[in-house]
Length: 366
Image (cartoon, rainbow, N blue to C red; front, side, top):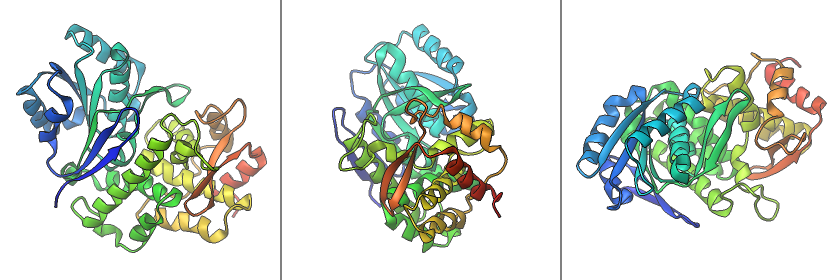
């Protein structure tokens, strides 16, 4: 099957290529002016990164930097280590970064590229489903702090993204399932065909080499591309659409849960819980009916994602949500649905409304 190329327009256009065995495209994306390439990869992926390092080594001076794996490694100290390594290697503004890994590696490596000399070229080679459909596309980069997730970061669009589906063959099943959290989210906010595919396919048949997974990946990325092109820096959409903020559906509670769990819960799992929560919030606000709220539970649950949560108190989660990036002053904002594929912002719900929705999520109101 031939590669699929999705073009991301705007001030800094680039292509997202979806297919198999794509590493050979890297030199063409990086260009001839680059002399040095920093290959930032998740530490456990050394065996996967080595062939890419060898290929790049035929064209450039390669600095390979293994990074801590997962969200817990997205810290200022790791970024500082990368800066020091780039400085020691003499990286200039015409040099480049290539990231190989999941969403955390992409976020961290993207921030290193955005901050070094105020921005150098970066190409992402995501190796997880979550990285392909979420972190690698759209130019958001970031690291975590003690106060919360991704509170420090920058917008820095890549020069290209290579979604090599071959890398998913060795991805543990629970990681693949977690990535489906972001995919299903895209179905609710923009492309209901995604939901139809998930609901009409045996979950065990959604594998790395299955045609249905490829279609899900392409559809989810297309949703993100369409939104990002219209609203790169999350300043707002048109005609009542929340713009890029729509991609944060379920994320306000999800990020609070991730922090409460010290990032031991997978991002896609937290997103699934967060989407069920905001669906319940929207139902109680009279924006959607019970059937659409229940569809959230069934769609996420069908593939094996969690749809309830009670491991942290409402008070603790509420306090964390108050420092969420989407808050405005002391007012919490939640992306909700007014109907299927019709996202909107619910600003300033009362604490009682939030608590009631959380009680429904945790089973406390049963």
